[in-house]
Image 1 (tube, rainbow, N blue to C red):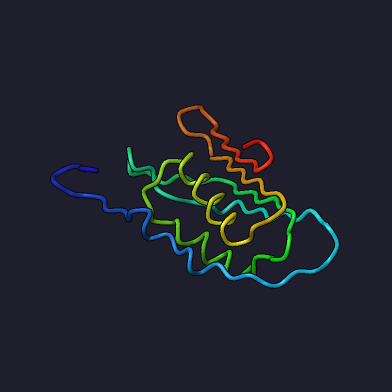
Image 2: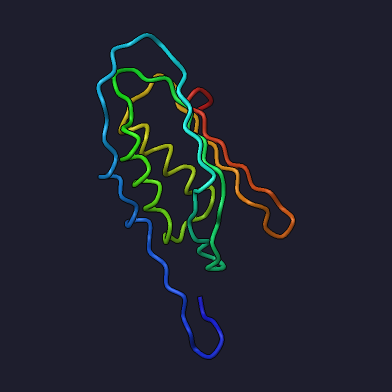
Length: 129
């Protein structure tokens, strides 16, 4: 994005998202619903170059794997300087966690801070595909 007087704001492509950070832990317990929730999700709007800040909610029912929380935090942080649309970020997180965990059920929900008077909420649900 061009700024005043030839200044350019640079952001990374989605190839900078660190899926290799995601680690799993074996799980053999009873069926349970697990929810992870953070108000600190952010990426960069590739159209405006401005930060997209919001809430990320991950809900899943594990089959044989849990995601290790520190690895999840580092994965989430890797979006910080990535130029990615809100819907694409939600889709990417959904696909990455589906591949990593192979859960019984997965819901990814992003609720972005108000911008221009509009609140954006994106939801992907494995049971609605």
